[in-house]
Length: 207
Image 1 (spheres, rainbow, N blue to C red):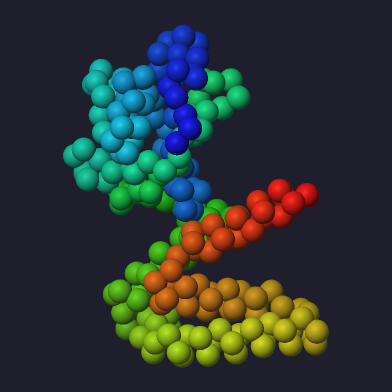
Image 2: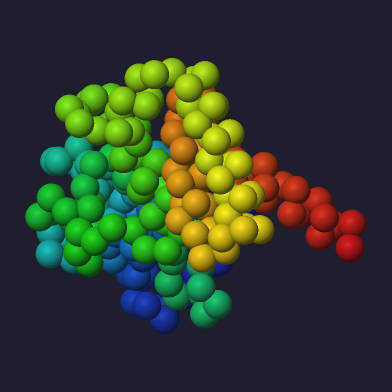
């Protein structure tokens, strides 16, 4: 991680930098906290987000009492060097009210919803709730899922040329079944995204 605490303007913020915490996968904003340089150093060394508690006047590791730790993924400073954006993989809810986010328990917005949906598929496959279409199809195995993705792909192609008004719904069906296939194949969305990002960067370098 190419980041150093000395790059920040600590004097401007009276040695306390505001820190936005964001879920690395869903992009949902989880909380706002504050770090002094010791907290930032400890975060980078341990891999678990550590804040400076203004009420307790000490360092505190998020999750030290609840075990709902925030595992560090990336750190970015803003253009004025006086705020941080940290992405994490959270272990459990972030808010002390047992909610996903301190800004409310809403589902991740935009494309982040796909990462949320991935976790739903994983949980359904594990819990096997009665009456769940997802759980039933996941139990039928990889071959059935592959067949289903093929069927949905044909329906997308047909809708594109014959019934364009149905195309959005058919694409949604294809994406959902493709996500189930990803989970059943012991892959994850991040793996697919990494491949796509790599291809994009390669094309950019070619000009």
